[in-house]
Length: 234
Length: 232
Image (cartoon, rainbow over all chains, first blue to last red; front, side):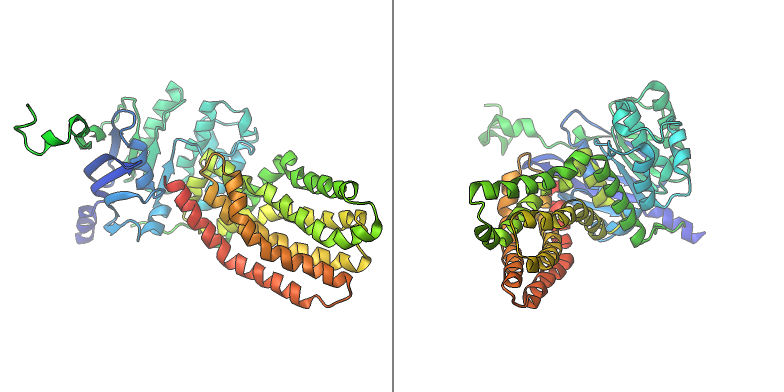
């Protein structure tokens, strides 16, 4: 009993006072989010708010951030190996080789995740049954995206980090993906995603990066007037 | 609690990366022949441009074959990580639980198998065109086999550093060329010495030492460079 209590007290993933820069411009700062098993978080914000930058930092591709990312109570750069075995990142770029067939592409990912499900089943689950041996350059953009999404079925990771997973996918695919995210949440996983689409998941939490943006407009207006409130009106 | 350790072996990841890259190389046959065609054309032009005289050519042959082999390797370097960078596979490589060292190693090994090894095997044929004395053939093969492998490894560092640049070709050559020079000196010297009837144990030993050092250090440098390149 006590063990499960302490386990629940430590968030699976925690962002502490996180801030990201891009080209020496602070995109957001002071971001505090705690993710417990079964949480689904949608990162919102306008274009250029730093959604992708945040997800790349979370996935461990970029280590260029302020603050801390903690995985199961450990700070991330130290626990990077454990984290990489327990997380799955799907970026803007699908990570799919066009010269290879979907099955050959997934073979490589399967060797990394050690999943139990067969590649054929994973492809069938994303509606690509019969396309196992079609070269990827013959597939449409949506189908290519589905090949990448098949990795979700092949993975045993608890943390999913999905950057715009609904891009180029048809309506049926969107509802299937939503169901898959709900299923992952039901299994005790954590899903972090960016999307401009409104999702119909009951457990969804929104984090809007705009709320964490530095007051950029004020600094642009003039350096002198900012330090004290009175002279700003002059 | 479920075990978070992935049920995959180190060797399994190496084999998967190796197989995938070999398959991709096999699908891009035109790119495969690029260094070979360059090597053939460049060497063929020498007798036309310099002199068809047998004695002159024989004197120049070791150096020419080695220099052209070096340039052919350099030509094929740019694409080493480029497609992975463009389609997002590189990001996935960096965050995979597999050791990046072995993934880079697998990529370099495939690169050597499709560029350095064919160039090495083609070299005796081209040496024949330059009337290299018979004593030089085996040393040429041995020195090129060792040398091109070192060059693939060293080149991987340069390719990793320049992968995020749109036009990194020239910079890549500038970074890699100084590191190729020792390989070229000892490689060409091995063939030259063999033709003159000397012992070439020393040169091959030095080339072997280069290779051993490159195997250990180059992938580490390359994976560090890859992390820098993708960080931005």
